[in-house]
Length: 158
Image: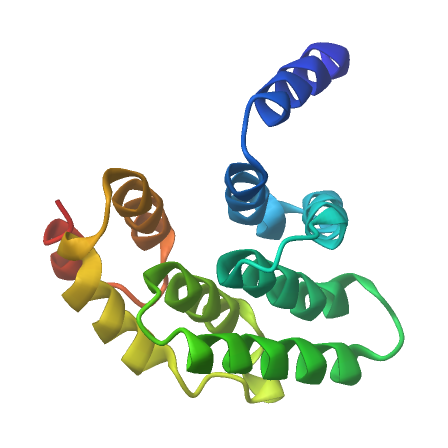
């Protein structure tokens, strides 16, 4: 069974673009430490200068703190600074806002990296209708499992 699942996953990744593979892997990353590590490995292999790819790489750095024993604070601080810089340079990119919102929703409150949740949520809800079909599907999928977006707000995402 594991072999069949591995082959299906390999087949999916083979026919996806790098960004599609990152999106898919990121969506599954919080399910287990193995999925987190797979996402980190995939993000580290990316070489592009695309802001969205760089956003996923910053998220991978933050998520790495979840599975390592040392330098957790430094990883979160570095990843968060990188993500903030990317968003500052690309403030109208909804996918970057989704990445930051998902990171901030899932990071422990004690870390303190939660200051943009309300702004990102409002930006996502206000700009959803302006996105292409692929991004709408990705945002909607995120919204369905989001801890911050309410059922009423989810209903507005069509």
